[in-house]
Image (cartoon, rainbow, N blue to C red; front, side):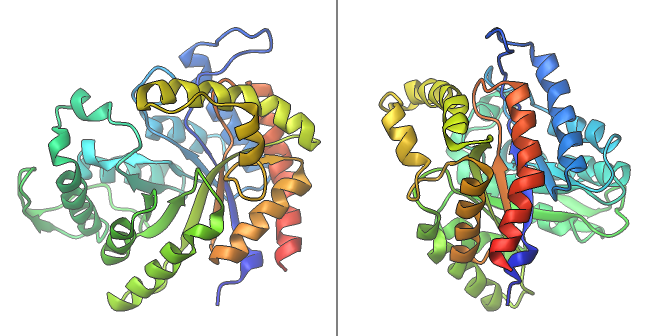
Length: 345
């Protein structure tokens, strides 16, 4: 039985290129330095995890999250550090393992990796992969990565990568590497995470969390079917915390509007509106935006509905300023986290 009050609370960022207090876009270099400072604050306020996404497009500054996380590792003490997500399909599993094993050494065992196919496709042509191989690439590379996690010589063969024969990979970790698969909500992806023995991270970016209960139940049943030990389930959802609901809504809206409209123009979405935003921050929406009490209540409801072990709030969205994000992190760690645990105890 999951101890709900033991919930791990973390943060995710994609390194969105933000605006300063005067409204000017800051540089990608400054954005990356800000992300490291955000990780340091997350550690100081006692949060469990800090995740950095991988992207290859102008809205996001971070294309090499492991380097950013290594910088954060040198300035933090307790917080676990990982990705949100590593796009395994357009990377090499051996190199991914090597980079995260190195991060694990630098951080004294605090590294985690969340693997996924990613919600953007820019990395495929950038690194020479054919989108027609989308499913096969991820399936084969996840299989290989699961074997590398055993930290023994690997013999492996697939159809889209050179085979390995008794290949040993270094460095070894001291206590193993914690690994998850990020899932957007297909049963096949849920079962695959269980089959290969990865934790399940549900990316809930639309609608109420309780509609994902069938996926959580399917994952737990699948672990039993594949004769695996219980593994954790987490949720990743966007949010922002301020002193009051109205302040949080007013601060966050412009960033959500900018990001939704930028991506929406590419994908044929209707223009984002304040009416839709207010629906998304309500009880039936996937945005955790509001005062500490409002955000804590919504997180606690999600934990109860799904029985999860971790909740990660994506605290950066669009052009929200670094100062507002730092205040959000502070409130999340000092106010939201204790409230959530009190509500669940």
